[in-house]
Image (cartoon, rainbow, N blue to C red; front, side, top):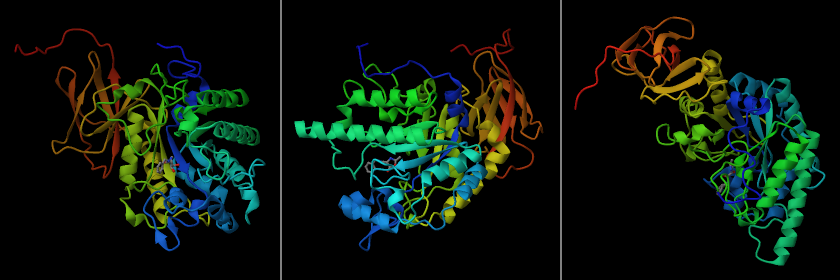
Length: 448
Ligand SMILES: C[C@@H]1N[C@@H](C(=O)NCc2ccccc2)[C@H](O)[C@@H]1O
């Protein structure tokens, strides 16, 4: 191992209550809301099929012209309580809100910028309304914060001169001030999820990323920080030059998930994935026909896949400029919520089970309970289980208590019957197991 000043501060998972809550929450929602919701992917009559929150970049709009969108920011349908009720009904335990995206527009009245809600016709503190509304519903609030800020003249993509260094140091101080402002104004925030940290300018200032994590943890004990903030002494990001995870959880699974067989290494640390419903739209885009849009079932499978591998999943919502949600997102929240209402015990507080994945779906585990989450029922009507050495399946039952037959078919192998009544969708079987069950069995391995 090489010595690092700005590498990982800790080895292994955090075990304190705040991190346990982060982990046990498992299911979150992202809210990407900013000026980009106004044009919704269209600029000067041309619709761009790239990510809508990057329209400024695709259409090559100068910052001062883009920020004029503030004059149109007046979400007359915005109702923070309604947003919080929708999140509650979906069954999310936390919501990550874009306090400031790459465009630099702040959803809170920051005194360090003139590009905030305070300088729009809406005037009011949207972030403050949302933090209160979600917290009142018992939902944790996490802050998304983009370090890269296209509105700020001192932002630099790289440091190539003394002038760059002086300007960027001013920018880092501005960023510190905004982060302290957020931590002071909204002390119930539970997490900071940093984005826009991939540029050389940040990689050359690993010290600053370590300082930000420490600054926020000093101000808000227990707060969690994502790995995407961090760069070490050599510019290595997420994992330091010794291969140790920086921050409190890996945040590299954006619109992708680890392979349930080949990538089991992720079960050794905490991680959180985030996903879009279209192929790649975080902010509101007026035309979702431009890419594939995932069905609620496909979103659900990704949620279960993440939890089955010991991770969290954050599902993205891109509210309209008027402050309402598009019908597809309302329907999605409703469908996921209905499933979570019935089967959420296989998600909340659950983790990687350590059993070999089978084709019918995923295992999750909470203490002694192992859950089978079935997405692909087999023609055989039997769900094959292969247990770890010394583990026996004692009983299997649906969550309403109705037992399903379990038959031992070989050493550590079982057939679990499909329920008699077609569940008509992904369903859960809860297993009662016995571990470290020793003793001889009746099976004989083949001589080959
Ligand atoms: C969580 C997502 N991270 C931002 C993102 O993808 N940035 C990287 C990016 C790089 C190149 C083209 C588009 C976007 C997106 O805008 C979301 O905020």
